Image (tube, rainbow, N blue to C red; front, side):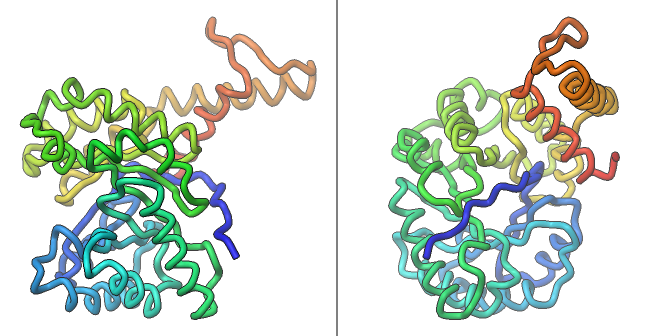
Length: 304
């Protein structure tokens, strides 16, 4: 049995990650404005906390009200001794309440395949629907960037790629982690976006480390949106407002998207044409994908 592809439009303007050992922080995250919340068993937990944090994550998943947010957790890396127990314990206990697992330190498609196979075995054993739980892959190394295309197509479960700025900079020996990251890491970021787009999955940018500098977060989020990312990671709840704003269409963009969709539908039904010109711009079926996504985001933001 293999996982079924996920074909619905995912809205991931913001992903808020918080420590898996803190029920207090996870409770706040579940009620936040994030589109996806990620309970972290990896970097946010000291080695002494990792095994105990699994129970806290299970408690959060099974007791909190997440509303429309995507529910996710991040296990430790597949090369660690914690990975398989992170997956088994959390999914067996709360798998029907997990929407996505964020895989760190993915260096190749084999890491995603390993997680996919393990998940499938757990689902079959527990009687869960096979393939419902999605995966996201963190691209955090030079090897991962070079293999991003293969990673993006490695599993029907894979729903997105995330560019991990800090680990990538450390892997290549770079120092820039702030305002000029889009210059220094343009190739890596573009490779992640292009690989994700070719596979039909989402692309997320990494964190702004100056967590209380909301102007810096706004700058990074707007640049990421202009570059083509779907959204951005947050590690501090006040960052969510500026991140969501950067990836939410304006009133003018929403109005134009609706006009394009209505005009295209009318032209096809009444005139039998597949392309038309609106505001001196050619509109065809490919253009509709962009406008459909804008309207989906607007609905998620409560603007429609």
